[in-house]
Image 1 (cartoon, rainbow over the protein chains, first blue to last red):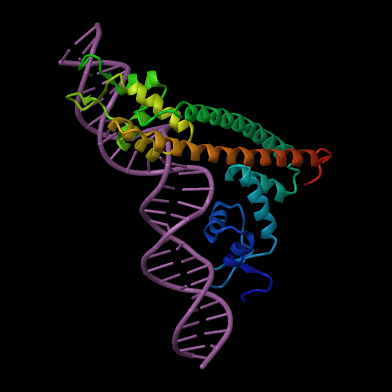
Image 2 (cartoon, each protein chain N blue to C red; image 1 turned 30 degrees about the vertical axis):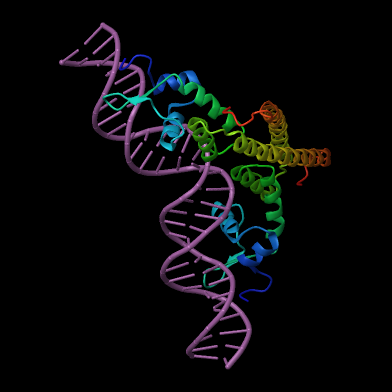
Length: 126
Length: 126
DNA sequence: CTTGACTCTCCTGCAAGGGGAGAAGTCATC
DNA sequence: GATGACTTCTCCCCTTGCAGGAGAGTCAAG
């Protein structure tokens, strides 16, 4: 063990449910930062990273883009209240989700209509 | 005009609502085929292409992938009844859409809960 | 014949990572 | 201290469905 309490990327991946690739990618993108590096160059993470990764996962599940996630994380870290921007981001996402839901509903109805029309196809070319 | 009744890619784009880039891309991918080429190499399309492009747009709006779209188009062109494969494709897409809708609903509820929890933030760091 | 609009092919890039190569680090054991 | 198994490192290419641009060639009109 290189340092007490610090975790290697594989441990972080296993406990967070994300892949090593993804965590490395988030580091490269500046979303998270390893607490330090081992002498050999291994990324070493503080356990605090799990809270951040959970936060990131939540935002990503809402299809918030990585640049937006980064902005929110930076605000959060800087101690500036992100309530307003976060709320507006989330509110707009909620709106997008509503739109998507109705678009999908319309699609679903259209699909069902299509299937009904073809019930009696009988092997003919459509 | 190089040939009577044939359209250049720009005309097809303008009337179909797709971009020139997209049409060229569909040609490259083999989804559609120009009726011929001009001596200088311009793609020339029969007006029949609009029907196919409309069909493609419908399938794409359902988020059916281009390879799947191509399969369906090929079956359609070959005269083989595509009812079965088309129906199964569409049925699975309908299933996916249902899943997406419920996932989005869950997200939406989660978002609303989040927003409600933050009603009384009062400028504090979350 | 020239001009301007259109089109050609080829290359690069996007989101959000995944896959793999080849080299190097780490840890436990002998 | 050396070995062997496992992990991690960086670097590069792949994905989907196009968009953007470079540089060159084509078309139709004046």
